Image (cartoon, rainbow over all chains, first blue to last red; front, side):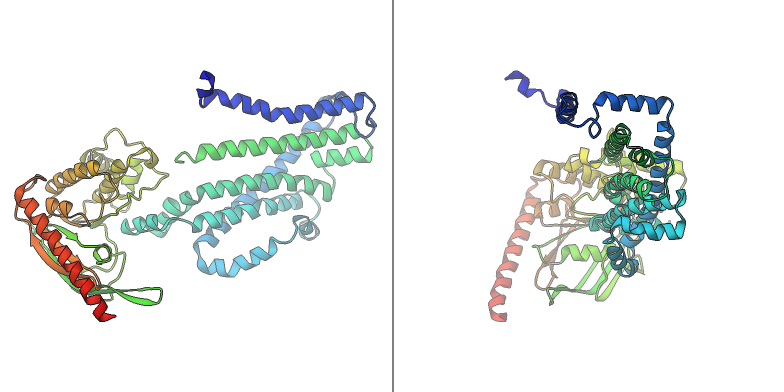
Length: 259
Length: 264
């Protein structure tokens, strides 16, 4: 009974271990089925071959270049989208006029599937890097706008009254009250924006002109019917997405110290 | 020597609210004068408009008619020379104690060093030394309210308005903070208006107790508390005054209830 009482600390390790059970079991099943001939190795090559392909791509192939290109695209798109998103969300949250004029438009536009923008963006921005970054920015922007707007608008009235008695200026209201009060929401929006941006990065690499990037790597694999390369690309996409999500969660937790 | 500041004159103030489309006369022709440095307690049952009166003085609401004047100038909005303490501490949860109190000074023309000194002085004044860098969620209710008092005082206002500041605290903490408030009032020498529903608190702290009555909100009577500060809770004269005020409140309530069926 004594070890039941152990509260925080040591719990973290078992929870991580438990999270690993499913992926490890799946990988084992994968490995077994391809080894035992249950699956056609052309469609599901053994892990070893994927690892070897990964090693090869890392040492002499374009893996690093592709990874770097994708991450750069992802982060520049995210940076652009997040900046626009926070600014637009703040304006929509603070100004009732802007809210009335723009929010119906925005709500209508966000119903359009993200990939449906690709032809339009391509015609405006071409098929190259600029268009891809714009697409990623658009994807990242949407959750940031929505969450920022909601957070900025939700500043508690009791604190607004404190601001009034202390004669806050407009800027002081914004910087001292509305933005800090909105920070948890904004961070949630940025977190979602990061996830969307990564998805959009891959989407842009699939649907727009082929160039360096993990998406391009996967397409190259498909064209050569190089299944290990395709699977390698997908594994990398998943791992990067997972890492981005975890990192965002960690940063979020660190920034909201007062909770 | 300049004449002391912090004089308040309220004359014929009326305030109406609409609640679910029905007009409510929150304050009906209120007149009241408070001398510089005086401590006035305002008591009354809920709905008598005592908090509304304080919010008008703070400049958070506008009167429908009548005049509210401080030191000869009509009150038209919030001002740093009138501090306000709410029932809840209303600290900014993302700022530490020091940062919350400094918020009071950000619109004051002074150097960084002066600002820091002012904040430190007021942290000492309310007994929060050692908790400068604590966040509000780490403070007890009493400590948070001390920080709120410091935030309201740090501008050195000429009038401090207190809206049931100890209403949400436990009895022991409330008694201690009442003692502290007496000391602070003696130290600062400023005008204080305290709204409370606690008659004990009203007589212990006030030079004068203004009793209000509801429907419509009005001043029923004023009671002088002619006893030296600081006062002791068990003082016979204080207890007698308190009982008189409570009896008066009960009589008001009986007569209000007697009127209502007639009006219906």
